[in-house]
Length: 205
Image 1: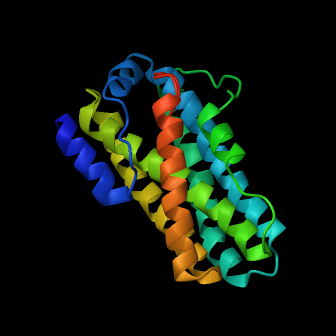
Image 2 (image 1 turned 60 degrees about the horizontal axis):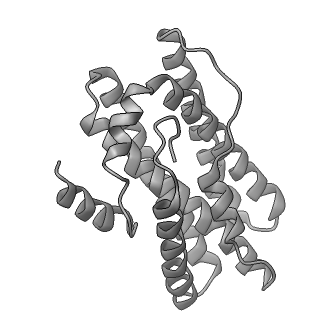
């Protein structure tokens, strides 16, 4: 897939404003052990984030109904990545600071109604899932390891579903106009974050 095709796919599938730098996949493939370690922590954090949302907003029954299966899937992915690491003799290292997520968190609006506070967390989670989906798609198409190509294709599909879950939940608790406006703002924020981040092959984001 050439750069133009990748850019179009990113915009069409996920709404992301800026595609991943083409250099990322080449560096990532050379550091696949580091990618897998970081990926494992990403899955753990994703499960923990969903649990936190359920606990922080216990009155939201639909939220709990939608996110409980996501928790199970993210934890299953965590186990899948660890299994892949074990098969390759890769040690589970220490967690790393995720500058991408840190910058998204810093962009969250504080205050507003309780539903708007929930919306901020849903939008941020949706973006993380969307960017993960995009990068898993790149790995599934462009790295040479056939087993990992299949591995990341499967995970790409799942991440896309989680992205939709978070957006649909935002639409459940907030007006259509609010979601449209704030989501557009979040997409611009995310593009700025991606544009300014160093291209690193030892991180998923």
